[in-house]
Length: 336
Image 1 (cartoon, rainbow, N blue to C red):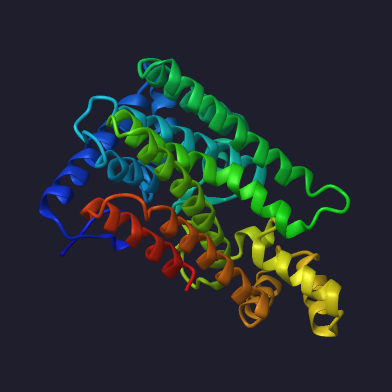
Image 2: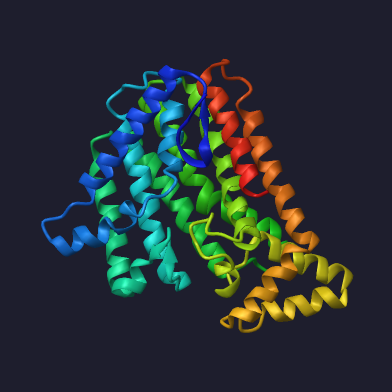
């Protein structure tokens, strides 16, 4: 048994391990090449998060999905680079919107260089992704455009909040399907499509990616509260401090509205107050960790991961399928 990719994913076949490792190394080289500029400062800013590391979750999925066709096909690695560049670009923009100080264990770009540079660097990465995408054909351009539209729509809906009468939890899950699920789905779709997999396999892997993407984001929501370390790549409690709605807090609000328990209302008052004080944030984290709302969010994470696993059932049994199934377990494990 060997280990490759995020979360210590086990790959039980040497040939598959070699293919995945080779593919991920090529993606890494492609990311560095795509973020070079004739202007040294742009290179520094564009490579800031590339060099900080990251799970490379989306490229890994592209590599595994390509195993259902010709994994050595020339479009596989560039398509994975496109998806990861797009993801990185959104991180630069997210950190500006969230006023985040840390990303992947280093200063966020907005902290180091200011909001304008962070936004423009994200735009630069989008431009480089588009340049690579243009060589992959009009269908790939259309798929990426549709996914990016869904991603941005999800971000806008998150910012706007649920419309009157809409269940906030349902609204949030819709946001996650667009904001996170859409791009992870494209990673799987591109990997399979560029490898020439048959249409049914491409469709199955796309559906798998979207469900796994939602589970992945929900696990991050849980980690923001439950982790004592930097497992999520951000300081625990970052989302709470910035007032970003996450699933555990939404479940807490629903339970407080339904039952009106004094402890729940008191906790909500704490969450809605000023959490810039470290002691207040620590109190909020401690109380949320002991609240049933956190466990409910964990159950939702498990549900989406199991839906992703079930989607894979029609695919032929192989080591790549087993690895995709294990990723479902790994995502759930992150959420405890």
